[in-house]
Each structure stands twice: as structure tokens, then as C-alpha cells.
Length: 307
Image 1 (cartoon, helix red, strand yellow):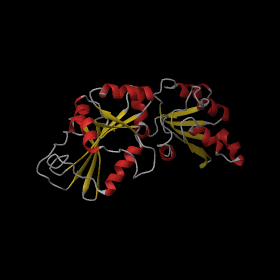
Image 2: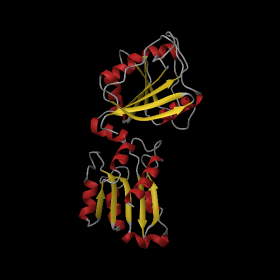
Image 3: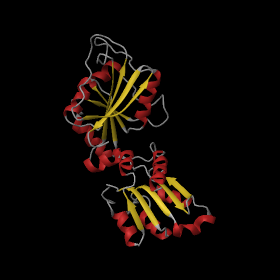
Image 4: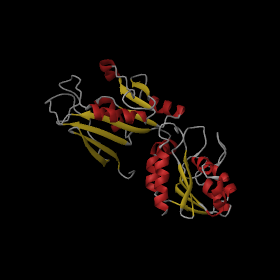
């Protein structure tokens, strides 16, 4: 039963993908007598958190049930005063009987403090319900705060014989549909990066014109703006995720430095015979998923142990 309601929390949390950044995505569900009496998610950075919205959604006729209710939250309730008051204190004031938490918040100002506040108030707290799923949802947020760098996604499209282009000339590899999926991915990232050669040859727009959402910030890797400068700017401006769409040299530089978290490879059925070879997958790339669209294979890889 706990897992069922936590899955609903994850569904709600994912609705904040576009606007919650740089805050984490969080969903909350309040249950009493086997019935959901309130639910909410963190809609937008700077606005009410998931727990606040969940309590606000409880009908006046159901408020008397809070004393026997369980609130499910995909991420540990915050314990610090930021733009909004601490959610752990709100839960205590509402007098709920039990709290179920998906995963602990790695943010330095929380890190178990929210759970401690709840337990000190005598509330029964269960942690680790669908923990891996909850952590995966906010992998960008966790990576940023644990490693002080953005979550890095490498992306390229290649021919069936492993080339990025046709004898050095640009080649449309994605179909209209898989190109739309790329734009969806862009809408979920804060920054998009290409190399100097790609910028000079193709002048890519790198926006999300085929999907809804905000455009990522465009950056070009060059001698004066290298990988370290990219990571420093992301850290300073709280950009949680970086999508690298450059050519072989740019992509390989991140692979060789071990600076990647996911890799997306689209392979079309066409054969060109010669061209710029696609980068080689690193040895610790773990297959995560595979889809087939329009005679093309889209494969996702992640580092072993983070799935």
C-alpha cells in the first residue's frame, strides 16, 4: 500500500519538471481511512512546496481526519527557512499520525533534519519506500549537490555503420519524430553545449521549437571556454543539468574525463561507408533502456550502479 501511494507521489512530482528547477521535483499524497484526502506537488521554484499544496487541497469536511492520516512525500520534508517555511514543521502542526518518505534529501540544509524534527514530535516516520525510483527522478538535483557539478547527458546520432556524418558532410540522421524527442530532452535540461567546429559549420539553434518548455542556455566549447569553465558557470548559476550535443571531439573529451552521467545514442538504418566515427562508449556504460522509432534505435546508457 505504501508503494502504491508513493508511485502517485512520483507521478505528481514529475509534473514539476519544467518549473521546479533548481529545486527538486516533489510530490505529496495525504491518505486517511483508505482514501486520498489531499495531494499536491512543487509546481514552481519559489512557490509552495508539495506538502503545502497537499494540505491546502484537503476539503474542510476532511480536515478532522488529519490526526489519523498518513502523508506520503517522495523527498524528505525540508527543515530550513528558505523562500518558504520548513515543511517538517508544517506537518507537525497539522498533527498527522504518520509520514512516509521516499528518500532523504542530500541538500546540506536538510540531510535528515526534516525526519529528525518529525520523529522528535512523536510522529511515526517510514523511510526508503521506492527509494531508488525517488532518487532517479531527482538525479539532476542530487548530482549537483553531491558532486558540485551539473548532471551531464551526452547525446549523438549515428548511422548503422557508426558514423556521425557522410564523408565529412552533415547528414540528417533523426526522423521528424525522434528529432521531436530530442527537443523534449532539451526542454528538460538547463544548458546545451556544442563544440566550436559544430557551431561554425552548422550554426545550430539548439532550442525546443518542436516541444513545449523553455530553451536551454546555449554554450560553445572553445579554447577560452573549456570544460572547467563550463562546470564552474553551471555551479555558480545553479544550472542542474548539461546536455552535450557536440561533435566527436567534444563528446570524447567528456567521456575521457569521466564527466558524464547518461548517454543517449540514436542509430539509423542508413549506411554511408565513411565519415566521422561516432565516439566509443566508455567501458562503464550500463544499458538502461532501448526504444525503436521510425527504423531507428534510441538507446540510453548510464554509469554502472546509478540506475
